[in-house]
Length: 333
Image (cartoon, rainbow, N blue to C red; front, side, top):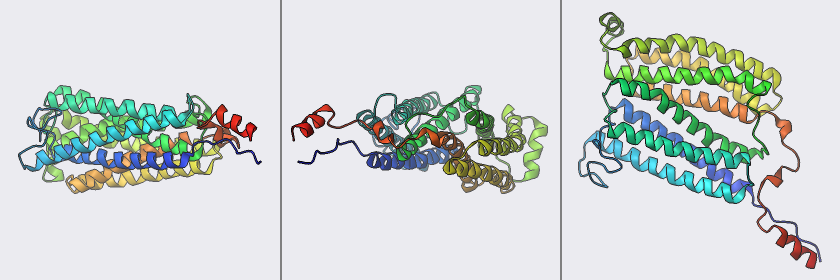
């Protein structure tokens, strides 16, 4: 009788689920941006996790429902990431990249929830421009970016059969580090600029420029750092992309880093247009989405570097569902 092959778990189902979780999470993050831009962060008052002391709010104000939808959709993200992590534990061997990615995704989802709770409980939402909120904004942005990175690399590694995490200190990673750090710092200044645009709206470019003369608040000056830094960071992205492409042979990684450079140029166009249009919500959301895609592209370029790390035996990264028992049954056959 023909001996049956050892059964292994197929990564395709996990990868599809993980990509779905990633895509849904990006939509929830975008809704969070809309919540902040529309000044709806205090829609549920200072109650958390309840909304105005109720599971389902009785009020029907726009900010209340924006905040309530964000809480429900964020809660679903947490549930999906818990399932993702449990599936990774069951289907992948210890210390496998997919396991690590899923574990980090769960960690940063929990810390993202903590950030949200702290902001609501202390009232650092909507039009609040306290020093505490200004200091917390870069920390919150960093956590959100790390969450997006973890959610992106998990299905990426599962889809490509990556057996080990690419080096963080190798020449390819070192080529990307300046762009990664620069993009993160640019996101910090962008968070201050967005907060300033919400707290100190201007009806014309001239009025916006005049705000620098009055010195009404520190945020007015902090927002100026963003456009200046943007030019420098985009130049840094092009430099890093050029170095990376000279070292990398994997076509997917090379395409990703080239796309990142293109997104950097596009951001230099969308940013000024947003200011000239006096910061409409749709343009600010587009600007933020492009920033997220640029960040994710950089992370995936690193995650896909080193095609030689994959081998024909890469299917051994999955746990065997039957283990030695399958081999015993095969021998008896």
